[in-house]
Amino acid sequence: MTATDHSQELINVAAQAAADKLAHDIIAFDVSDVLAITDAFLIASAANDRQVKSIAEEIEEQLREKLDVKPVRREGEREGRWILLDFLDIVVHVQHSEERSFYSLDRLWKDCPELPIPADALATRNRPENAVLDADGNAVAVADHDEDVNHHVDTDAEDES
Image (cartoon, rainbow, N blue to C red; front, side, top):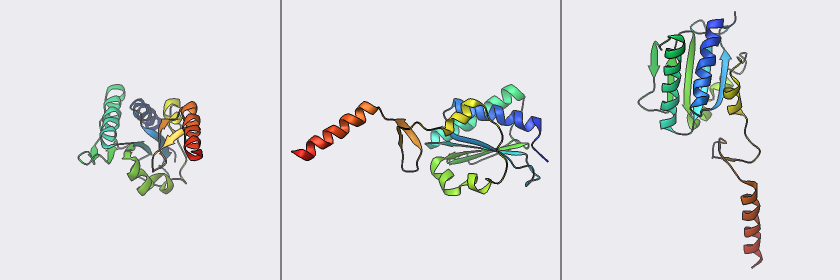
């Protein structure tokens, strides 16, 4: 069994909504062969609690506006570190980067097929070569090459004196 066309449509809208709110590392898995309760999981990350909430709200709003779908269950909103939205056909996990790294849902579901997602959502997994990373390895900014070179030169100049 594979995820239904309706589930794929839900994933597309949810993934685009997450990308629009600057979620990162968006991925969707077809879990229909291993779980009877849902067809697909969408996982997205955010750098802080406020952004986790904002992404979850945008996903909920877009699915309601575009497909007239509301979640049957919502968990984790108060803490804002990991919000789960259950739409029956899909389950959306919006996680703070630290929670995503710790619980590693991607690793847990890696044997399930990946579902296609919109280009904007897929692009959240690409990091520029000169990305500035936080302690968890998440891109937080892009360093300007000239600044890096100048900083390196300044550092060398200080070492010589």
